[in-house]
Length: 173
Image (cartoon, rainbow, N blue to C red):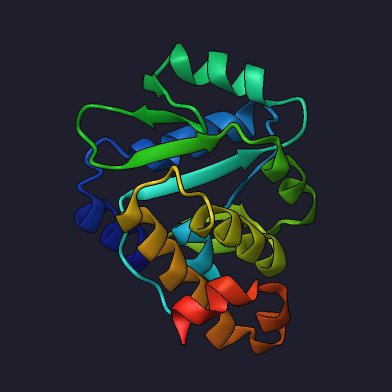
């Protein structure tokens, strides 16, 4: 209960938006997993973030998009569907990039800030972070956050270091 209370206070999630969105996906049998910084928090020392990044299983995106558009405020971006709600500072981003869809198959259930959710495998998380860091179209500040997430993952899973391109490693250490 402490983690859930912390999540609500820190994220100003007065409507319990995050928990209700997760429950909605679960109720409709949508396969999904956490793939962003919150997912890294499941494996490494947590950092506070108002973003919740999700990937959905192959063939689920269109259903998820329609379901979320009917209940929440949504904005369409090139790589994601941004979902939000008045009364919560949390932003949920649903990945559109099909490279993330297979992450769902290897996800494991964790408690993340009081929610039991599927979380992408560390190798998949690392790969997603490498894609984000090497995407020059993204915001520089976002790439820096993704670099920090790579460093957090490598601290916990040093054996994954060989999966990080040298150009990315050189920006870390």
